[in-house]
Amino acid sequence: MRVGLRLALAASSLLMAFCASGHAQERAASAKGAFEAKLEYCKTCHGLQGQGYLGYFPMPRLAGQQPEYIEAQLRAFIERRRSNPIMRNVAHVLSPAMISSLANHFHHLNSPPFGGGPRGAVATGKRIYDEGLPESNVPACSACHGAEGKGQNEIPRLAGQLYPYMVGQLTGWGKERGQGTAVDTSAIMAPTAHNLTRSQIEAVAAYVSNLQ
Image 1 (cartoon, helix red, strand yellow):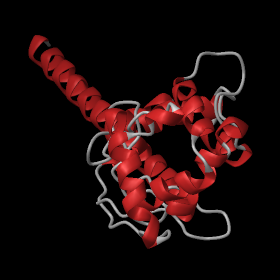
Image 2: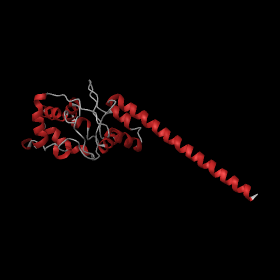
Image 3: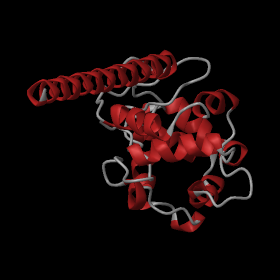
Image 4: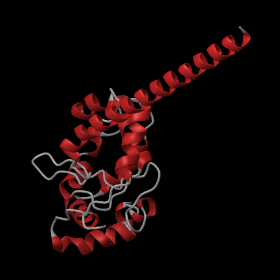
């Protein structure tokens, strides 16, 4: 009887282990499927390789973007600190784990930039980016975004960002970002965007849109 009982217990333990393993595999497959579904949805606007979309409503490049920045902006959409009805609807259904997974996926993409913008303004844009405009209280962009425009942590990558998207964001900074009463990291850019003229914004956008 004791031998039979030990065999029965061993068989039961083995069955439980198999069941647990099977459930874990099912959960992993389900999580992967959910991630792939969300990723396909992101690609419809931001491009198959996160390169962005040049259209009537330009969609930003996400390829190579700092994951901390993507995560921070998705939270800003959810918390209504950044105004965009489409992205709020997309973001508010994402779990923290899904947000992190998507941010890391796009960070590791490296699609070539579209470029664009007036070529004659690139030199001026580079000067503003590297040196700023002290007379207008505009600091050098490179001081925060880096000499190559790659950004760091919650400071976004600008290299390769779509020209029309950059122009639209900088000219309308206060209309979309820094909404509500909560402290938002985007507030640091508000005076800089305000102090740039339209032609200066276009020059900076033209320069960074060609950076690799």
